[in-house]
Amino acid sequence: MSHWRKHLPMTQFMEVSYEGIVFNQEEETRKLLKFCGLEFEEACLNFHENEAPVSTASSVQVRKPLYSGSIGRWKKYGSKLDHLRNALGDLAD
Image (cartoon, rainbow, N blue to C red; front, side, top):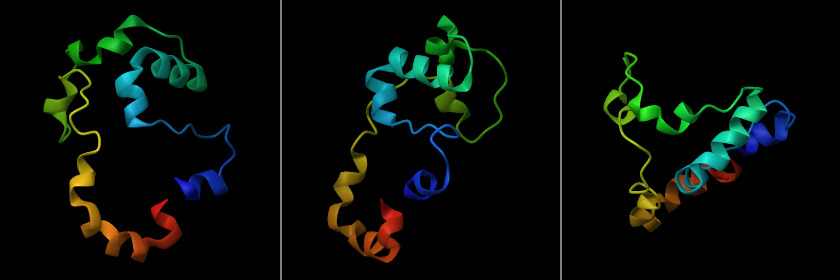
C-alpha cells in the first residue's frame, strides 16, 4: 500500500482494512460505497445470500458471511517471515 499512497492521490483509491470490514461491516461498507459514488443497499451486507453465479477460486467463500477466523493468522509464522520482510524492505509496509 505504501506504493499506492505515494503515487496516487487519495481521491483515486481507498484503503480498506479487513478487520475494519469484519468488525464494522455496515459502517465500512457505507464508506466504500460513498467513495465509489454508489448508494447503500441492505443487500450489500448480505452479499453471501446473492444467488448469482460465481466462477472464481473463492466461490465457496463468496457464499459465507464475513468471519474473523483469519485475522492475525499470519502471526503464528512470526520470525519465519523476517527474511521476507527484510528482502522487501520498504515494500513490506
